[in-house]
Image (tube, rainbow, N blue to C red; front, side):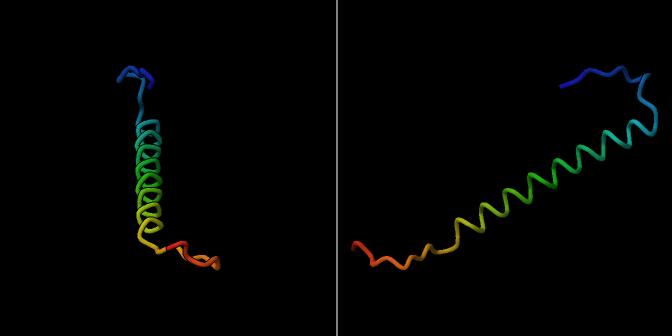
Length: 51
């Protein structure tokens, strides 16, 4: 967490900051989606079942 005075933030800096926030949100969404998909896939093994 960083502190930045609003007066010190120009248009380019704001664009960069918002871009980083969006990139982080997209990365978290993709990670979450891949974990959910992996959890739905049945596990299979060449070993016989212990049932």
